[in-house]
Amino acid sequence: MDRTRRAALYAGLFYIGTFVFSIPALALYDGIVNDPNFVLGAGHGGGVLWGGLIEVLTGLTGIGTAVAVYPVIKRYGPSRAQGFIASRTLEAAVIFVGVLSVLTVYTMRQDFTAGADAASVTTTANALVALKNWSFLLGPGVMPAINALCFATILYTTRLVPRIIPTIGLIGAPLLVLSSVVTLFGGWAQVSSTATLFALPIAAWELSVGIYMLVKGFRTPSVATTTPGVPADPGVTALVEA
Image 1 (spheres, rainbow, N blue to C red):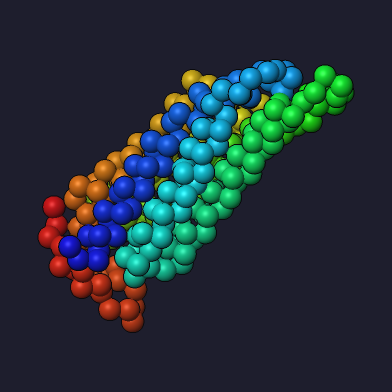
Image 2 (tube, rainbow, N blue to C red):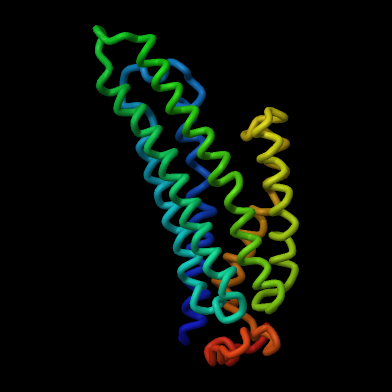
């Protein structure tokens, strides 16, 4: 297996990983996010710890997608390739902020005693949950659009994958940003049927590009798209267009 096929394989696995890991977190966080008195309750706290672990994996696999494809795409869009790594890293950092906030509430729940000021504890916990909600809006709610603008534009011009795949991402990016802006100003809830509808194209882009890279790898790029002065990657040019 040549290095380009290996890069596509790893990137595909990481992309599918981000997609799979991002699904169960909302359900696992349901109690802590939707119950204002969660911190005053007793017991283990449901799936908060599992939700935190899954979100950490989401962030790490997200970084992995950019690191895996960087050696290939830097030849066709070096600035955008660097931007892809930066945006993925920033997305993971914002996700980690949200994880830290819910884990702090979890710790407060475990350490809460009858002698503590319930009102103060609840206010602090609700503030941390608000931080989690904002991080969810600005991380998974905005950064996937930036990721698509960096990565999908390279794939579209080079045809490393069929153009329909990055086209879906380039359509989904502005829709996701629009939905996030509307949510920011209270137009609709981030977890709602309308927001989900606006997020579907970007989700379809990430799933489809992940599956294609995993199964097919990269197609032969156009020589004209290679950065001037940078020789074409022999691993890429050796691939047969599917």
